[in-house]
Image 1 (cartoon, helix red, strand yellow):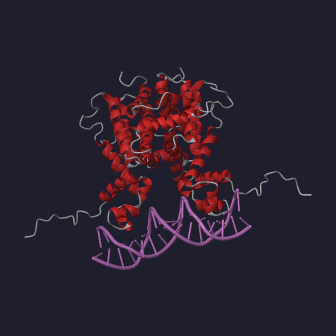
Image 2: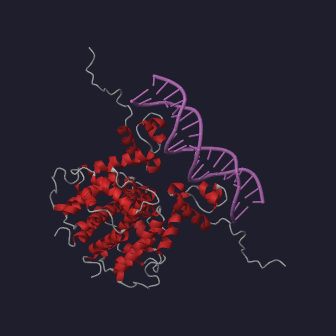
Image 3: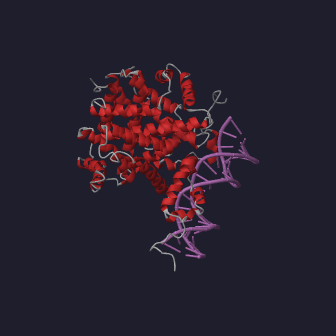
Length: 241
Length: 241
DNA sequence: ACCTGAACACCGTTCAAGT
DNA sequence: ACCTGAACACCGTTCAAGT
């Protein structure tokens, strides 16, 4: 009496698969950064040899793309047109906030993600990641009643700002953390502001003025303020009027 | 009678120097891309050994940063506060156009520059490149009479858009060129639009609508339209009112 | 079909040795 | 002070050989 078998029984639970490889790659990227993602380090985690990965993944480029897609899909899974239904509550401006914050948080959780997302947008603009991001943001731009001639421009401005600002924030947090476990975000900003105040007044009047007003702020509030600023420009009015 | 000697005569005109190395690095990046910049390839061009470069440059990171600084300094050399005097003709909005186009053209001439500039902004926000770009844009934001509380946000939005859109454009041009010498930009956009039209109507309504209206346009006009859109949001009015 | 692991062609960086 | 070039430790990728 053999135990009941399926047509396609899994041999071992720890068998190699594209999904297991991609998830391990995301973990490795989170812990060791982009330079830490190595076929040797990855294969060691998966208890196999470097060559084995090539059976499931074409190469390092595809592996990075797959890791990026995995992370961004998770981030956008609970976005607009999700539980709240199409349009959602609060109108398209609030929906844009939700999507933007989803990406902001994802980039904060995966500091390598901003660069990879930007690379996908630039170098594979018809790839699944680029299309997904463009569609998600663009749909809300459309819902804002932006004239068709501005769809592309408005969507581009939002996407570039979101990725740039989220990447900036993630990099700041990494540096703040590297100052020491007890030093927090505000200590890091104080250090930066201090160094800015020592710049030449002739060459850097604006940067010095920025430092004088203090860099301390709520990152998410500041981030959303930028979103609203672009929305205002796109719609020709305040975002919630 | 020996010829007049200076205190520090150049030994040979082709002697190694940091400047010669950086210029050769820019050339190599332009011709072979970021992956083509190698200490071996670079030292071959300079008729020396790989180790020689380390006497003048600390490592690859510093070399890339120096190449980025060299390219961006050239791009911003003839910007605002140049011949036209502070403020220049046409007001700050026109000045922002000039700076933005300067960076746009520089990124088009050096396709590797967009990624490197973004990396500098993120990872060395107090470095000379980041400060120079922030100061140049921020000064015009200040001239726009933007309230102080929005200085940082407005400058960030502009910088992220400029780098993102310029990088996008440069990547598009590279792909268009790779389609063949005779195929031009519009042929490339037609190909992209065609592939977008074949996407699922349920999943990608916005992208399809974008493709339907045609992707063909003047890149610089489109780019400046995005700038104006952000300026409008920043000032709460049209850029030239 | 899937995995192994040695081998190949590269790379950044170092450093004793030269001039 | 400045340069040489071999050497080291690493990397992505391939591929004959196994199961």
